Amino acid sequence: MGSARVPASRASADRAAEVRTVLLRAVRHHCPAELRSQTEDLAHTAWLRIVERETGENLTGLEPSYLWRVAFTVVIDEIRRRSARVAQAETLQAGPRAVAPGPELGAEIRSCLERLPEARQLPVILHLQGFRNEEVARALQFNEKRAQNLIYRGLEQLRRCLAGKGLEEP
Amino acid sequence: MSDESDWLRTAFQGSQATSVDEPCPAPDALWALTRGELGEAQARPIVLHSSRCARCGSALRIALEMGEQMAPVFTAPKVIPLRRVRIGLGLGLAAAIAATVIVLPRPRPADPGIHERGGAPEGIRSLVPSTPRSRAGLVLEWSPYPSAVRYQVTLASSDLRVLFQKVGVSGTRVEVPEAALASVPRGSRLVWNVEATLPDGRAIQSAAFDLVVE
Image (cartoon, rainbow over all chains, first blue to last red; front, side, top):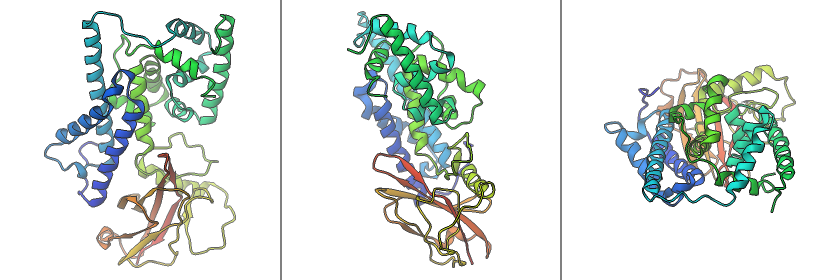
């Protein structure tokens, strides 16, 4: 796939611009928490790398599916590189990484998640990670209705389990 | 549901590991997963890893969001279960064409001039007459979709080779350059579709329409 090329045209230039826009938006929406302050810079750096990586080629002449794949790959590499740098800096600063509120509750949630029927575990975990129902469905290759059901039932069971431990919505 | 579980999300995410000990899947694998290119046996470990590793969870969501905006996929009627809904133009077109064959005919609006395959009746409709069209100054025109901010139009040959594509169209018509049809024999049947982008970023696909060029 990577070797396929199509002639550059206005349409493909538009497409490259669209990929760039979508890339920026997706990174803005889903950038890992530790890099949230670097979102813009990260996305722009990634785009520059895409351009550099295709040196000698006309970026706008790349086959669309290849361009999308490259854009994703490069941005994830950049995210991983930066995340590793942040983690390293935190290690050097010694102190334990600040954890958002409720680490104990987090541990209890995990313990309750382990008791869920297997089919519900993964959809609920992805939901708690912030995935929308349709994203859960696509990641797990379900239809959306099924994902929604599994999440709904799983959350119900999770809440019951937590209530049994005296943990309820504040 | 999401509002009620916000406190759970906050607590869960706050206690989640940024990364885990096992190696993260390659970006290509995450991409392939979201494109429906992996079987369940290959996909599940990747999703499982991403559910434990916040960084890969983010990566997976970026792939899903990017995938939603990718190349046009032609809407098939809901009665046809399509496991892979975003697998590129060729298969998307094929799905729409297959849908025409598989689904029982439904009553058509009294407009014999429009040919279309698949898609919801309330969606974008072709305004191109069904009579053979001249390749000089061929215009693709469609009905506006409510609140659409822009459109993407794709024209392909009957063997699903893309002949012309235009993104970021603000109106509801585009003229196809004659040069784009240079390889098309006279009397060929072509297929085209439109993707509308809504203000919230969602994309709405039209059915696949067909036309004949002189």
